[in-house]
Amino acid sequence: MRIERVELFPLRLGLKRPFETGQGAVEQREVAVLRLTDADGFIGLGEITPYPRPNYSGLSDLIEVMELQARPRLEGC
Image 1: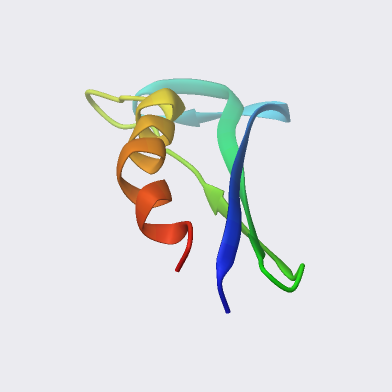
Image 2: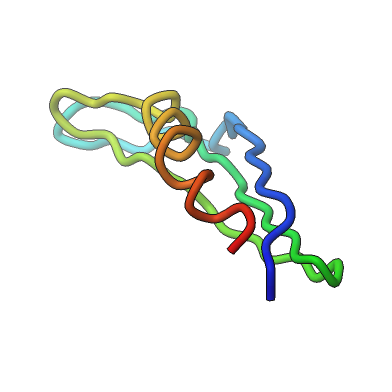
């Protein structure tokens, strides 16, 4: 298997109703769907999901790490 394409689709999903944490109410979730396509056209899907915590960096930081560090290692493998 040779990975030909790595794609990320960031999404912001509203929750039906907020849930409460020690940090406050959460009304939406940020996720990114990861799609890998190999040379034969097979597709694999994954998810990148940050979880709220102190010093929360958010989805944009995880996407940056994916783009700078993981993508170069995946493409062409």
